[in-house]
Amino acid sequence: MNKNQIASFVERANSGERRSVKSPPPLQAREREAIYYFFAKFKMLDPIAFDKAMPDERQENAVKTEFANSIRGFTKEQIDFGFGELKKLIGMNLPDYRFLTVARVVGFVANGGNTEVARSGMYKIAPPVIKPAAAIGSSIEAMRAQAVNVLNPQTGEYGVAVVTPKSKLTKNDKAQAEATLSSLSSMFDE
Image (cartoon, rainbow, N blue to C red; front, side, top):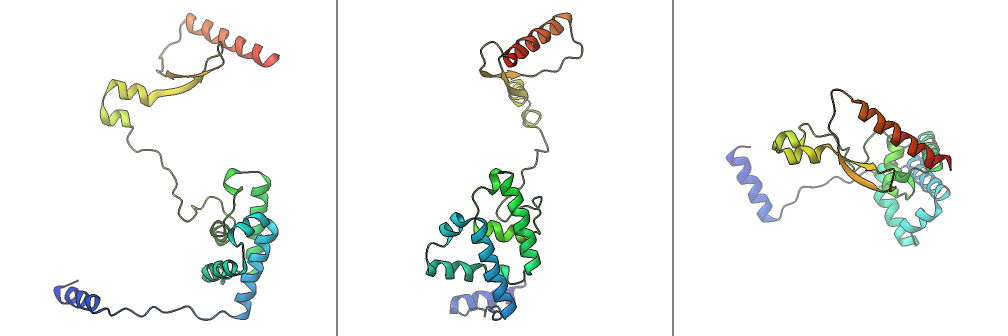
């Protein structure tokens, strides 16, 4: 942007002039049917989530209006397939699909029932490029980075241990591993 464009932009902003936002075209009969069909399938799949999202008729109209532009392009086959896949995931009792929201269901159907696609508002967590211990360089930080929760077979409680890989195992290491395995197997035999 050059100075003239910026000055023009600031002048329009100060004068209160607004850009005209083009509203979406009115719904066609097929699109209206797709929206009704989507919400009917949602109510059949999870009536509790449907009632939570839309407790009364006014709220139901507001939600349908909010999501109409997202749903209007769906076909009945797309909706059926998405809800079929969603029903399978709910049947597997996955924690991500226990409490449904309209936005989550719309996103799921829009992605063709693909769970690998990141949902709206969700970000996949990537492993760090640089290990924190290597970046900091402290031996304490290095031990914290290698710390793991382990089960103490004698007490049955979890504790923190620092894992340091050995280049060679000794006879003592072998005896300790056999003792741990035998105590663990005796715990499960009972």
